[in-house]
Length: 385
Ligand SMILES: Cc1cc2nc3c(=O)[nH]c(=O)nc-3n(C[C@H](O)[C@H](O)[C@H](O)COP(=O)(O)O)c2cc1C
Image (cartoon, rainbow, N blue to C red):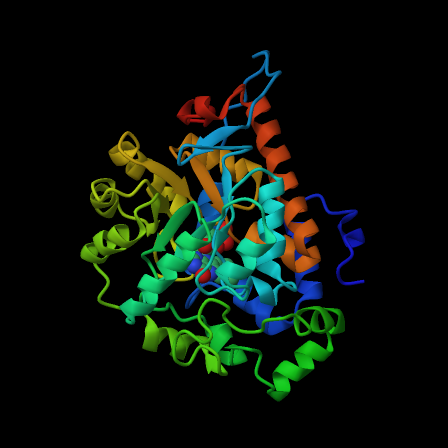
């Protein structure tokens, strides 16, 4: 059965989950999940830059009693991780956002619900017992954004993640060629793809929602069939500026995370903006193609602002070793994007749990082999010269 986690038996890495995801989910959605923008140079650079960072092996350091617990935004977490916001998780697996949120909470880490989710804020809030984070995209209709922030407050979301690097959509060639729409448009190519994945079709297409749960009925054009790129171009506010960050804070009045900082000057402004944290990120290589691997920006951003603001990192993390690299270079924690997403595609919540389990164990062993016992003690000394 599609929902079975039996397929996870021989899974030992995120790469295994990625291979399973490709088998389970129709091509147009896998393309959407995997793709980077344009020539995908930055998508590739995110990985190669992480691979280029090497550890310093330490021995006889008494590596017992290791502790992965830490805090993010002052809240205790079982490991220095949170799930990154991912649009259309509900197209990876039926009620994908709820499945992923439950798995994250069971693993003791925060889940971030995307503005562009299939399940709505209220759907997720009704299905889980702990607060989650909500990610906000700013659109031109400020009345709608004000209402969305109020909905996140009413749902007891514990942090607002304001994404600042996607007011203009970086083109993803595959999405255009596939004619990506929500709900999946009944084009011949889409029908063929879905026909090859009957388990997925039965599960996802039988679900309650097949469109953007937070937007349908609230914002024009969100409940019909529409191309993602056209819709984004029409709705998103390209004039977004630091003044809007102040406005969002005045509406939200809670912990605010600015996601998509990749430059030291922007990080300095963010540190003075009153936000609680930044996410050093290039949106997983989906926006500015030609930008360097995100991890290359982390050390100088950390040197400039780590004492003033909490730093989270994403873009390219596929293992616990990658998490260790980011922590060693100054991040307090990491957001995981495609790694748990591939797990969700493979086996729903059980697949997300598997992804988190793999990464937790890899981080733990890497700490042991570099002679570090606590997350707070991870720094550049863990890296080879
Ligand atoms: C399929 C997909 C959808 C995404 N949707 C959103 C989104 O709705 N909001 C957002 O802030 N970031 C979004 N992101 C970016 C992620 O939050 C995160 O920055 C990125 O995935 C990290 O890179 P990684 O996938 O290499 O870990 C998306 C990423 C992917 C792969």
